[in-house]
Length: 396
Image (cartoon, rainbow, N blue to C red; front, side, top):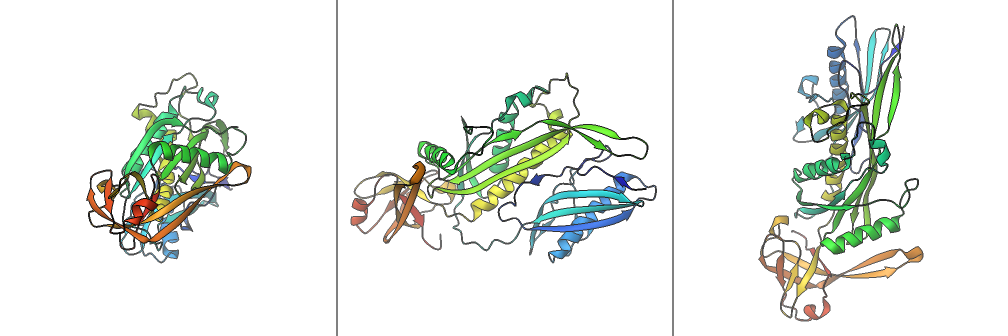
């Protein structure tokens, strides 16, 4: 007799499958599968072994020779910490389905293997401005009284970005981005205007903003041999936009989704500041959804060129808004980029960036957040203006 197991969670073993509505930036996904006989054994043990074997199968297709014992499931069966020096590393595992057929457990997974980056990028670190991520429909927070989930998620996004070796500075501000309608996606123009306004206010090239779209509850029925089981589950869907305000370019526009059993009683007021919440099924899937998003953001930023903005100038020097925190050092060379905003149809604005290749600037002094540049070309100071940009020359 066939028994269908609920994908991505059971009462016996916590399994969280974070799925993306669209393929993440720079992610390389490989599918793998495994089959193990149940034969009356502990389902905990069988499922853990099958998932490990499926991950190993997917990795083998990528040309990576690892065995199941090399894979750490980390209690979540969500991401392997196995480091692969020459090939990259396994970052995320999406458990697609689990099914018992004739006493054999079939497991199918999708594994995100980090590729070796072949994009050209400078050696400077990135600064990122992050807005608060509000719950788009606050009434959905009534069940459990998790009205402060938005600030908690925002803080954890900031913390995970801080731990990224590429991002030197993360600034979480007390502003929110709310679309004009909860029923329609915001237009590019609306997103662009928001990002450029924040960039002008905080002098930041990269801006991350968004909202928590869905935290609704639903019931899921699992067919059993004797009777069906009904579990109360909760969605967590987060929409994020990563925008390069200097280039007026959308870098990430993705919706991240996870779901898990909701283990709290209807009358229980959940404290999202308490570790009990974050150790629950739902809290852990929220953390893994955030982790999935942060991976994509980091990968995307890796292949972007750092641009500095002129924040002060005189007849001899130019001061830009990136310094030693970003890796800028004395002697580094930049070229001037002229920025011109041109109006388009429907109120859109297009940034036209023009490289002034003959105008080379050299860093003569640097502190944590700014650098002072000079040039032997006196005409450069007449041709440059506040809020113009500079780009690192090759080799920096």
